[in-house]
Image 1 (cartoon, helix red, strand yellow):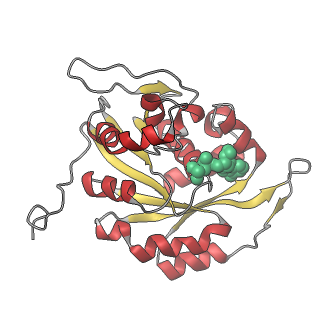
Image 2: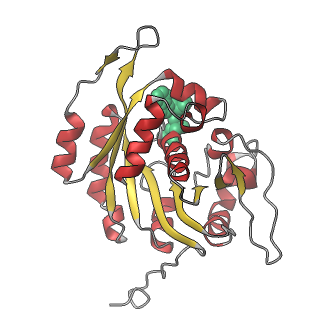
Image 3: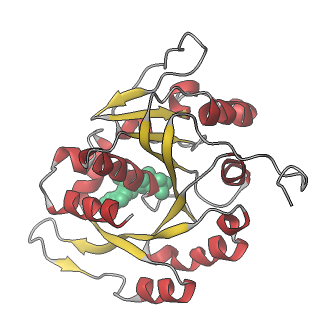
Amino acid sequence: IPRMQRGLPQKRRIPDVKKVIVVSSAKGGVGKSTIAANLALAFARRGLRTGILDTDIFGPSIPTLFNISGEPRLSTNNQLIPLSNYGVKSMSMGYLVGEDAPVVWRGLMVMKALQQLLHEVEWGGLDLLVLDLPPGTGDVQLTISQQVEVDGAVIVSTPQTLSALDAIKGVNMFGKVNVPILGLIQNMSVFICPHCSESTHIFGSGPLEKKCRELNLPLLGDIPLDGRICEDADRGMPTVVADPKGVRAQAFGQIAQNI
Ligand code: ADP
């Protein structure tokens, strides 16, 4: 039965964008935005024309991660023009609402602003758009997955939030809206000692592999718990740009390749 007849909104492709992938997580604070940013940069380094769209309305991170502030300009046909840094085009709720805007006000603007972010940005020709979703499986995530043609989803998890993955799989949000799950990324898997660089599996190794088998999903890669990744993110120069030849950047590059 056609979507319209079932009363579902029609999915639309984001204009001028060849492929859209969403980066999602069951919970907040697992490093989803850090990973989305580094992956976008890794794709750009592989020669793809890449953009990143931050749809996290209450905690936009892309302005900080890409060290971008200021308001986007409007094009002649009233489309938002993305702001660029490090070779990646970006658009964020943070550019539109401002970090100091009260949360209540942001809440009122959510759906309107979301529509604008999804359908009224002049990306100007992209091979790939990385969409940083808010954590969880609420209205915003559902709206996005229902309204936009998404080519695939990657899910970020830490060893502690493994169990929450069942929620994503359980409510089967992506399945319901016909978005294929490309696989899982495990963040903060191994602790790298800042003094001796020794790696320690503080949460044990193996649980994610087991979970992937249970859920029948591929494991796209691991990112260690490493203070450098956090420092780089905080100063607005993500690891793939700050230390492009380092092991951490290589880990992101490998995941980009696996996607
Ligand atoms: P989320 O988008 O899931 O809320 P963030 O990307 O904002 O999470 O990350 C939360 C915090 O953890 C940030 O301070 C970030 O710099 C830090 N962080 C993320 N991944 C790592 C990592 N692999 N090693 C160290 N710190 C990390």
